[in-house]
Length: 404
Image (cartoon, rainbow, N blue to C red):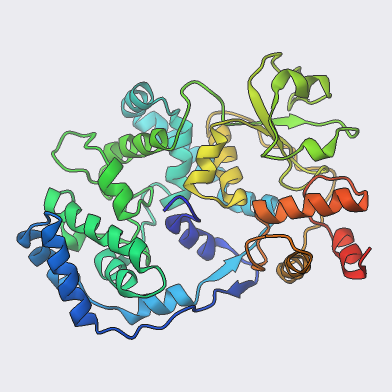
């Protein structure tokens, strides 16, 4: 589920957001008979080596729940400025909570870092954002949710795979069907893994014979580290560092698709957040300006790509990476000079519609400023002779409305 917006975090974003959004369109209708579909699923499961016992155990939960389809079809996509989102999601209690968890489970975190190369703060930040360290894992029976979405026409193939793997979790003895309680879309555990992720990457870190990401902190830590390593984490390398940028910077270089050695950024006047010089080395880094040239500034590295694979929302990924730096001891970021204006959800949607009409592929007019929209914004800023920092402004929207 990490090739698109991660479902566990999508649920979190929907609950956390306070801005208006755009309803996701219903693209299909279910016309097949559910009982016949379920019978075919059971037959196919047996051919895949899933036991009759596992299917029987899960049987009472293999049901169609129209409420889940209604939730899925009624999702609203929200957009928030980075500072607003990060203020809420990287709040002080999560920073302290992460540090407390690292102290509480020091031996386990050290073991995971030694084995998988993932720093404790990185694991703790995902743990905080996905479930507040297990306090908010969801309230839905996961098997009915995944069964419903596997039957539903909108994303059936994807969820059929998850449902098969959910049966394998039952067969392996990791969780009983009654224990599988998570989000409405079937994510499980304290870092909200989809069933296929759970089956493939969960590890028994406490040695009790089960991979229990709902109850076992040790299993959560080890499994999350294992998954992050699988996503491509590079041992010993940074993921994100705050920097200061000069006002005469070539703004079009501030782009995640553009990488320069840190020595080059230093030559251009970029410094560490403290004002000290950047390391004069060849480590490739991109400059990220989530609120434009007057807001916070970060250098991102290869490990930041792991965050975008976990969740391709730029705001979520930047917040998760920033939270990890705070848990690791970094000071609060510079917020910019004064309040930085941000487009409303409706203005962002209007901007996207204009960009689409102009031939830009922004992934749809959903009011959420993601990587594709930022790339199109940069192109238009360059065309109009504006500072090309990829940040959409009311001035840019006004000039696009006027066609100049």
